[in-house]
Length: 358
Length: 273
Image (cartoon, rainbow over all chains, first blue to last red; front, top):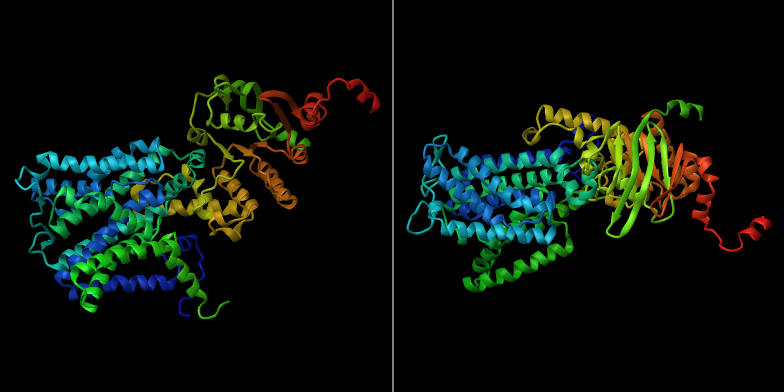
């Protein structure tokens, strides 16, 4: 009843190409932003930041990255875990080598390094497609993690083989290390993720996004209209890896504070992020957020409700959680194979008519 | 007709002595013909005659083992399809090759990709020149949408459109490239009479209004004879005839290829006729 676009006439192509074409969407997004920036930081605590919000935001960023590659450009990748690792190790090496360097620059450099690595491993994509490409990126996953174990230079020759983040400030506010306040880490991560999400949204509705989707949908026809397959795919690999790299740097530096190659950046991470974009919606920036939300928040919700609500033992709850998550994933994929983003769209279309059927 | 003759210009594309084979299979052997500026050139022939292979050679998908291709006065080297696109050759496919996940608008916008210049950073910011560029091209695309009368399906994902409209969108995408040479591979296959008439109208209009040179493959002889200025006939990879529609229609080889030749008692048949 309230979600109507009656009287909202578009008079220019610019307004027709806006991200939120409907005023209600614009207002809800604005409210969401105000809550996220203006309200949440006052109520945030350590648990809420580190168990809920930071993982959600950081995985959403990684999911956007993978979505650009897999959802928009159609190149299946299983190397996300390793690329997160590349971002993390790049951030670690940069910030220990140059302690004075602004952390935002460190983030960008980690993204750039990961982009270079990603493009290198994207080279085979010209020749191989689909599952075979996935296997090629799987090689990247194992090789890179192995490298981080075997070459002590990456973890600065320390005894444990782990990397841990020294405290760093941005604009005089501590955002990494154990003493960083939850509101600071949250606000920093939120800002970074928001900016990159906006960039991603812009990219996919411009020339690059169309070129990627053209390659995804029909590469022969794409070449006919002048799209160069290798360059386009490499650009997708580069930008995707940049996003994943920044997410990896945030994950290590701001959220976890310490990391070990095999444990933190293993193949499970690759699958986790892949599931996020499949459930959230391939080829949708919003879907990346929804998918990350689902995969991060649902287990917490389940655990809370089972342990605190039903009084189950923690171990039982953990196993139940696996079962229920599995069932939910299957359920959502059957109900809407195009993911939560599509489901959301359908709901919106229904809402436009509600409560009158015609 | 006189108007047409006046309009047709110099040779735009010339293929000489083209031979193409896949292993032992000869798809084309020693085919030569030319396409003049602003003309509508039909390529006909029975199934498997090598018509689509010929188009694939022209836009760089296949590389012929022998022969010369001269485009706009320059002998062409081996090239990839995207280079052909850059030189102004667009095409549509026999089986529709649209980008199924994208809307009609986006599909036609992809046709403008080559003309868009702003790099990734501008696009990410979506600010200033990048926006301006988007809007300019949107306007060009809207003109094509108007021309093809597909305003109503602008935002519809093309996968959901009926076959005839998909063909029209595909033509729109090719037009968005503002090509000099437009290759149409069976643009009217599987259409009903009304859709065929629409398509014919679009082809004639764009040839008239924009002066686009068109090479088309088509099986509907009525359409071919009505539309085309000149016709090339291929059979088993060889050039059978080349000339105006009337000349080709009365060519004995062509009639034989299409209707078949009866062996043995030719005399008696002719006598009966």
